[in-house]
Length: 139
Image 1: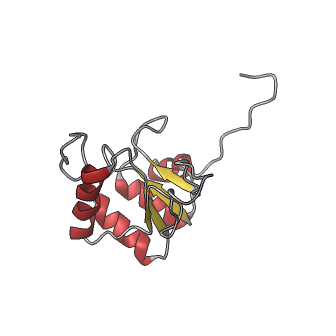
Image 2: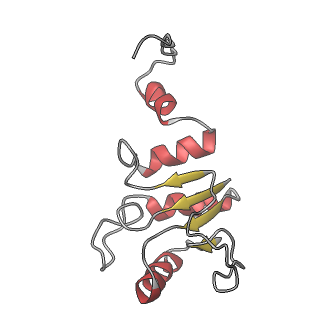
């Protein structure tokens, strides 16, 4: 699976342009996903020196990304007139998700076990019953 991961607010606390404290278990979880052969793309608004600092911060903690702000390592935006900052990924991990960012343990369970956030929460609450499906006339 290809997973795009935001940096500020997701891997580390928001302190832009500085690098904040690591969010609990962020780099440990990312290393486990890499070991399971997922392709991780660092997808961040950071550019230039600030981006280099973020990449090096992750590398120092054992997190090597498949690509950074592009779909694959060899992609060259200067030679591709159709280059887009829109990343093609199966999943995005970002603190700006609707509902916020789950903890990294939950994120790992979702990816590793192929479950939705709702399924993981239901299991944690000790119930596996499915919610009744809404009828088309119910909102």
